[in-house]
Amino acid sequence: MKVTLISIPVRDQEKALKFYTEKLGFIVKKDAPLGGGNRWITLVSPEWQDGPELLLEPAPNHFEPSKVFQDALMEAGIPYTQFDVDNVDEEYERLLKLKVDFSVKPTEMGTVKFAVFNGTCGNNIQIVETL
Amino acid sequence: MTFYQEKLSFIKDDLYSNDKQIQTVIETRRFIDNNFEKDLKLDFLSHVKFTSKYHLQRLFKRYYGLTPRQYLIDKRIEKSKEYLKKGMTVTETCFAVGFESLGSFSKLFKTKTGKSPSKFQKEQVSRSKLDGNF
Image (cartoon, rainbow over all chains, first blue to last red):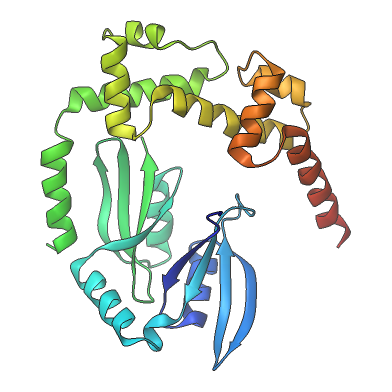
């Protein structure tokens, strides 16, 4: 078995696609219709295009418990998904200029530095730099 | 303050309050990053950090979740992928990242990435050609 895919629940796939590609900088790997207006959209990192794919999963719109869970995480400020970056401070400044909303500013803790922002489609996202 | 921020503050106080230890492991990791191609021994690292070998190993594992040796190997494999992509030969790459035997490098590379270094390199080359042709 191989780990190749991680899913992130999103409220609006098109909006998420724009945010994740235009602001976060991911690249579309797959985009296929799934019926009912849903799509199978996966993204990869530009610098690791054969790495794991991120699936923009529309579950909260079709499965109530998924929506409830997502809302609870959002309210508690918990990031369920995190991405590695080389420099949290630079990424923070870059995203601030793109009007991305942060709930945790760059913070050092032990051997990492991290920050948390609103992914605009129902999720808190954490970016992490290993110190 | 959100639930998450409260938890962070608790974890920071509970697990990450020893600045001296944290500084030691961060510097050890940086040292490995800057010297991965050398014949690194934990004895030497612990000497640099004025601490015992076993203590340093335990601290590193505690804060990074893997031993300095495992970290060094991962670093070397990551670097070797970079060098192979740039067109360095397998033998050159093996020695450039600090391995002493081509056999053990190839075996380890395959275990970690699923392919041999030469297969990895061929795929990278054919991929860049494909990108250009289509």
